[in-house]
Every structure is written in C-alpha cells, then in structure tokens.
Amino acid sequence: MAKKKEEQNSFEYSYKRLEEILEKLENQGEENSLEDILNYYQEGLKLLKICRQKLSEAELKIEKINAEELK
Image (tube, rainbow, N blue to C red; front, side, top):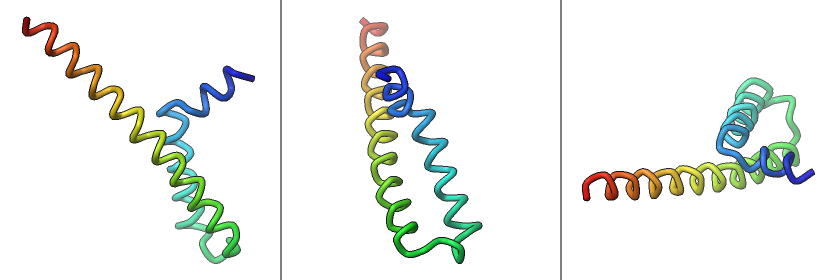
C-alpha cells in the first residue's frame, strides 16, 4: 500500500494524470457535469502542487551537485 501511495506521489504519475484530466476536460467537456469538472479541477491542483514540489526538489539537488563540483 505504501508503494502505491509513493508511486502516486511521483512526478511521472502526477504529470501523466494531469495530462489525462486535461484531455478529459478538452475532449469530453460537454459530457462532464459541473461537479465532475470541479472534482477534476481540485485533483489537478493537488497534482500540480506535487509536480511543482518535485521539480523544486530536483532543482535544489542539481544546485547542490553543481556547487559541490565547482569546489
């Protein structure tokens, strides 16, 4: 169960799920209820937060690696 949660918090999973949500909203917009759209929006915001956090962590690691290499 922890592995599944870890996978869902990965950048790759979050980004892919964001793409899926966007596709659903773009291609099936008329078929979605307002409640569905709001749920997708809410999920998208959570996924975006995960993606931004993972990118920020990667950026910090890269900066640390570069700083160590320049010493």
